[in-house]
Length: 121
Image (tube, rainbow, N blue to C red):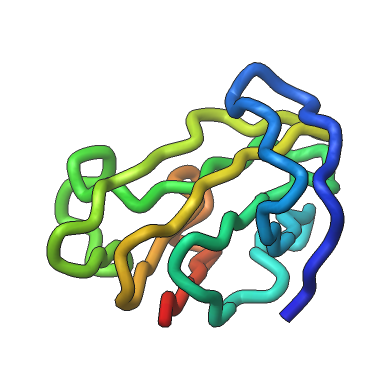
């Protein structure tokens, strides 16, 4: 697991996290991939997706935003989430409270297999 200290937010998409929060970083790149593709975290951990490339991406685990997608899944009781557009140099954070498997996509690059999984224990 990659754990890094809190970082300065580059966008208005999220509020800064408290210093004691456990933040795991996933990068989004120009190869249309989430890196790493799959992570395992603890309930209460926060994942920060950073766009390190020049292509716009989303982090979407909301079946309503991608009707018919078989690549989005949420555990029972979990809230759907969607980052909206994450521009170059920006990031999006989400804190996972419900245990289970979360499967998410980058909406514009789902067909290119830009898929990710967060397993919350």
